[in-house]
Image (tube, rainbow, N blue to C red):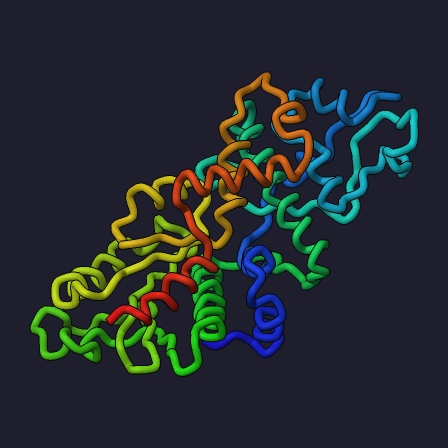
Amino acid sequence: MPLSIDLQTLVNKHLTDAEAISAVILGLCWNDSALAGAARISLNENETVEDAAKRHDLGWNPTWLTDAGYTAYDSIGTALEEPNPAAGPINWTPEVRTFRLDDGVADSARGHGFRRRTSAELAVLSLWTHVMNKRDISFERPLELSPNTRGALFRDFLIYFLQCSLPHGWKVRHEVPLTHIRGLHMRRDVSGRKSDILIIDDGDRLVAALSSKWSWRSDRGTEAAQMVPLTRYRPDIPYALATAEFPRAARVARESVEDRAYHLCPGWVGSWMAVNELQAGVSPLERWPSLEVLRQEGISRAQALALNGLDTLVEDLRNSGDIL
């Protein structure tokens, strides 16, 4: 179903800002993690946050949160910029609500699994919050979305974003019966299958077919059922994938059967990978002393994987309209 007027306005306001679009869609489609409390590390009396981070062997750097706009307080409510903090857990303002990014690590995880998951979640939250604050974007994040609702909302965002970003006269259509595509009509083995998203230029030429997958593991059989007749009868049409997958993002880049894959937030995925791979005993305070250093490594990793964002998807589709 179409996006609400409020969400359309939000997309239009940030249409040409790739990071802002990533922040909007991520914030409105991803559910909270049950492990956000990992940010409330315990301080000893008169201990600095940096010393506490080293003592706890954290896989994340509290500076990332402060760089993003969070303020840390000790257990009696004194800002940690002041000397001699009280003992007890750190409290953060605003509330820390991390995203549940890795479905391969359970909420009950302990040890290194807990360290990896929570650290990577806090890294992405910091990057997301920094963009939200820098662009002055504000909205209420949902508390709980079902997988189907989340996937449908991502698809609706994608359709609206592409429709507004592509040239006038182009059409972005959803769930078109495959029998309505020239070359697939009157085919015996196409039956009642439907496409996910089709891109049609102002000359009514089919430019590309696009699969929208919030999670890469979902509906692969359904997707294959769409791809087989398209690749058999219309091999001239590129088939692309847009996803928000985190744990399998590297596999998407290397192994996706689609012609090209695009990610909602490739740089943040790169940062997630970097933090997720940090070995026990290695200090993130030394590896990534600021949020900007972590952000730049994330961008570098995404580029190395050739994992492109939705802005590149728009550019590639525009360019395909010039091909004779």
